[in-house]
Amino acid sequence: MEVHRFEKIWTAAALLLIVGFISTIVYGAVGPGVTMVEDDGGTTDQADVSAALADELDWSQVENFEAPTPKAQHVSGDKYEAYVVTKQFAFQPGTGQPLRVPAGSTVTLYVTSPDVLHGFEMVGTNVNLIIMPGQISEITVEFDEPGTYSMVCSEYCGAAHHVMEGRVEVVPQSQFDSTEG
Amino acid sequence: MSTDADDGTVREIGHDEFDPVGTAALIVVYFIILVVMWVFMYFVEFLGRGPTVVG
Image (cartoon, rainbow over all chains, first blue to last red; front, side, top):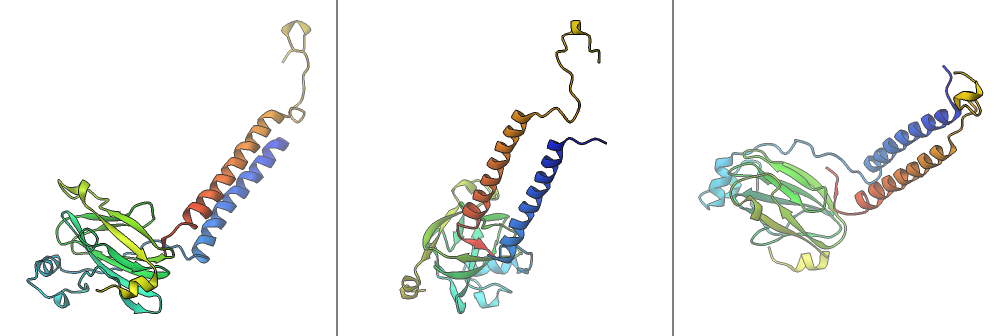
């Protein structure tokens, strides 16, 4: 088969482009460490989460889940963790009080729902989870710069789904350390 | 194809002699736009902006 010179160049360029696409994604995974969200958050009892929210049960008795506090809990070094409950139609923390995390930290978020399917999306970012009752969705996120993000419910959860929103505040470390909670 | 003068054929060229330079130039421009947009989207918008999902 006779292949035109221009077609040979085009074929080579197109292959190079594909190699380039794959290389950049490999770089993103190896260098900055971008990964997919895994399903290793585990499970909990949604009735227990519901009871703990209503102060009928202590959070320590809820399996695999801890009390949702507005301030992320320090684990070690620059690692923090935060527990968030999504419910009809609010984030706790998030809606009443913002979830507060320090800048320059790596935060693991554990999110669950006591009632129906919800979403946990930080608007304009790649942080987006589906929250299922009885399941704990886990995501680890690096927050480099201070700033405020909106969190919205990204899965239809009922009549007031469209007003279900909250805030994540990324504050400088010194300010984070001086806040209560 | 007939080479008779009365069918309108001015000049007949072979497969390799036909060089659509204009089309090639247009494709090169599209290609450059594509590469620049990919680099911008991946490195500036995706990796450059936080927060970054690492697990």
